[in-house]
Amino acid sequence: SYTKMGFAGNVEPCFITPTAVAVNESFSDQTRATAKGNWLAQHSAGVMADLDFLIGEEALARSRSSSTYSLSYPIRNGQVDNWDTMEKFWQQCIFNYLRCDPEDHYFLLTESPLTPPETREYTGEIMFETFNVPGLYIAVQPVLALAAGYTTTKCEMTGVVVDVGDGATHIVPVADGYVIGNSISSIPLTGKDVTQFIQQLMKERGEHIPPEESFDVARRAKEMYCYTCSDIVKEFNKHDREPSKYIKRLTGIKPKTGAPYTCDIGYERFLGPEIFFHPEIYNNDFTTPLQDVIDKCIQSSPIDTRRALYKVCTSKPCFL
Image (cartoon, rainbow, N blue to C red):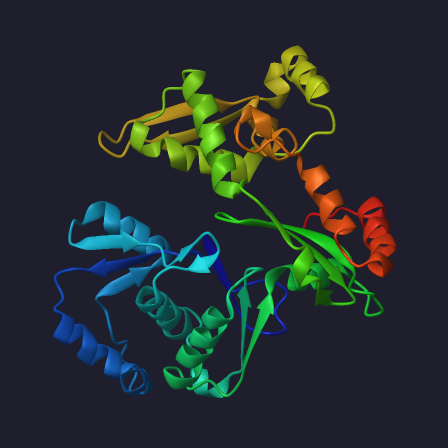
């Protein structure tokens, strides 16, 4: 859903942008191929090549306002779905956002668990042959997330990471910095499912939201106001006793008429993430709670690592 990019040594990413590409269909294939061959030459001359496409927020905005641009998402369910579009996305990230010469920098990329080896090979081929990077390291996301969770240099790098993305969710056991590959579990509930469930709840409650904006409003509600609760019954009672304290309000502008609208965010704040712990409220085909999946994941790990994995789970949060 989002791409984060920056330089080593920074405390936070320089840019966070949606992983979306809008391509201008009016450009001919010959023009596009010619521009692609001159990426590095034109960049060195101070001219950005391949202006027939946009990425990130610009891509989303242009696809809404112009019919000549078609929107596509190069990554689906945590895997690269379109390599040509992915290459365009990387080009814009390097030249237009980071504004660096790839030949002068080593690159660290991340990948989802259970990614096929062919994907890693093709990624290396593009980075080395197209962008001429001097060095490349491809890391599994949960390992980096676990490393970021430690504040001391003397750490065992052992833990269970629940990696919830927009299109894929994995439970990954890590022992001493190494992923236990045969114990990785995945569940068919993702961040997009949380957004769709919130959208469904708001629609059933009768909130007056423009249909074309309903998904975006649900996503904003999830990112701004959602949280997990320890007891769902107590949470309902809290909201019923003091609705003014817990109900939040979102505002927006209707894209067709330009008129403002408002909507309330109530039970959706805690019911959205609750699908991971009570999946039956959203999905009848998958009813195993997340805590049970984590337990099975640890039980399938080598016996000498289970004690350390359980210890981490009970002493600090598993979610990063």
